[in-house]
Image 1: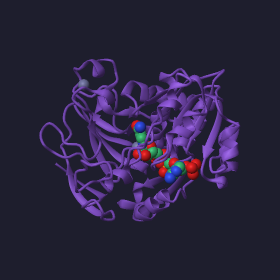
Image 2: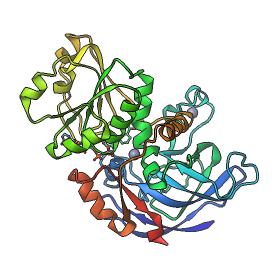
Image 3: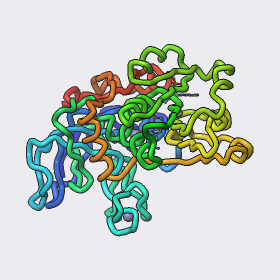
Image 4: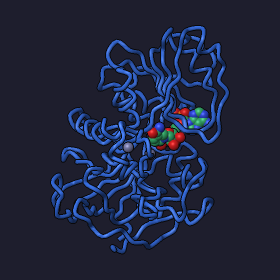
Length: 347
Ligand code: NAP
Ligand code: ZN
Ligand code: ZN
């Protein structure tokens, strides 16, 4: 077993505190990664506070993990010591169901094994990337292109793939008008990726203060949703809407901005359900859909796409002892656009 240092929530309402635990010994198919950076996703906050139910404590959050391979098991073929490597939101799946065989491990029939707050087949609890090192099967580990900075690449492993996957699945591209609702960690990646796909991008935001940033990130238009007339002008304007909002909100006002046959894709996961007005869908044959992260093959494709298009996350790097403060700032929308923990601060 490998003694490891991290930061954990010991219970649902507790702040994160220093925590020592053990990683499994490196098996023949495993790599041991010394973690250099880990992004702070809003899902970490939802789960550390048990807002979705089912959280397992003590919990070391973190699923946007970048580091260097310290050791590769005897049978490992993809990695050698010294390589850069990444781990995203899951570290295993059944590997045999139709979804796994298609490379859609996130939709595994038996459920993916989450990077943290997951229970492995042997009963052990998984722990995430707010820690010094991680052991994972090489099949669930990503190659990180050298041209990407480690801090700027970390958020790609969740925020990047969560926005890339639905844009690709629904074929969003040139000739489409896309609205991105919420300009946070996911939203700012959606803007960059959609721009690289040639899409016309409008940001719908509650924060006037993000206007200049939205344009710098590549948005064509920025609309503050608290101005009702602005939304009236956008009725039946968009082919797609990608909703990244983390808090409960009214879906119907956005559905009415879709053209006939338009699709609104939910990726944000508020902790409470919201009412759906059937007429918002019926009158223009609209669709509402959802998407969760992406499979390993598609995550690798996204990393290579980002390297090719010089896309990284805009990050604010913090030492780990500032993580509780960072959580409060994410909840206030005070982050441009992702906190990333420098794990050198934990040594
Ligand atoms: P984030 O950085 O906090 O961004 C969320 C954005 O939502 C905020 O920046 C804000 O943008 C907007 N917002 C917040 N509260 C709002 C409210 N009450 N009304 C309207 N807009 C509000 O969070 P994130 O890390 O991007 O994650 C976003 C959501 O996606 C979370 O629920 C997270 O759990 C979920 N998620 C889902 C997946 C998946 O696979 N589906 C993966 C990762 C994360 P403006 O200031 O621009 O309004
Ligand atoms: Zn995430
Ligand atoms: Zn499976």
